[in-house]
Length: 415
Image 1 (cartoon, rainbow, N blue to C red):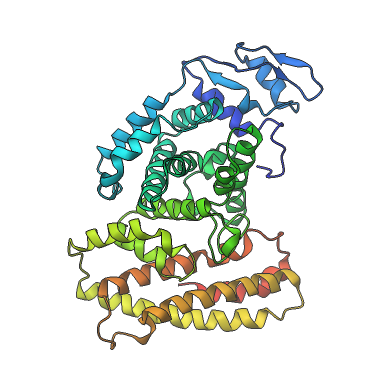
Image 2: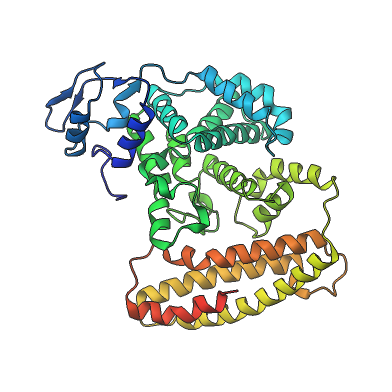
């Protein structure tokens, strides 16, 4: 997908998703559809035909196509309430920490300021990817609970819930093969996926129905306070309050979706690098982790020893990689220099986080939580495995000489 494509040019993936969702139900124009010259292509209430589909792909329109269509029977807010009730009746990890807030969240759903385009797009998501729709409901609920816990007023709570519900709407612009692939994505495909927050922000802002705080937060939901996120690599005060909340919502749900990952590990990952997330907003996650810890999760002796060995090995590799990154920061090649400087920053922050926890001192130190040792080993290797991609996805394609100069740096991080 071209992230520069104007919204009034029909996106193939959006159109295919809409047409797939239309199987078995009518889809009609919610207003007259014109091309950019003002020629009417489809009248209000008329259905899209296969012939018109091809015409729509070949020309820019006056308004984005996805803002000019509707299903004759789309989901209403009672369906959102039923989806939330289904979540609360499930065995999802969210259920226990959300139970205290469930009544207030449910009461706000019917008051969400969701416009007809938002309804239409959610219908499309629900029909094409039930898993993505479930994720939207989970994000709506978690964002609402976090806003309630922060003592937000009803308007703040609704805004947080709506932001959670719509945060991934930009994924409609992506090749479906990219959705949910996570760390399987190579560098070029990750670069395509990384623009979806901006596409969602642009689409919702173009409607004129949603406040700037909401659209901005949707564009920020994969950012990090320390600049290690995407797509804009924002830092500190450049992230909005609602954007900071959405960052935690998205990261938490992403970790809870991993096999074998519960609240304790999710909480650990959110706080292991100081300054990555807004600590003032981590209370709900920390509370859920504390409740889970009372269940007595343990690490056996073999796993403990393996984790200490893993941390020691990772420490050696990080030290070697950091030395290489600092040396490459003086390269005469700009793209090599930029990538090396980014790698050095990320490695230094990783090292600082583990130093703060005392985990580099080794197994001889008393009072170290052995579960945290195992979690640290897993989290460190996970982050080191993503470091090359995080340093390179946003830069122009490297030539052969750039790649050759950087190759020893990436090799030094390999397990």
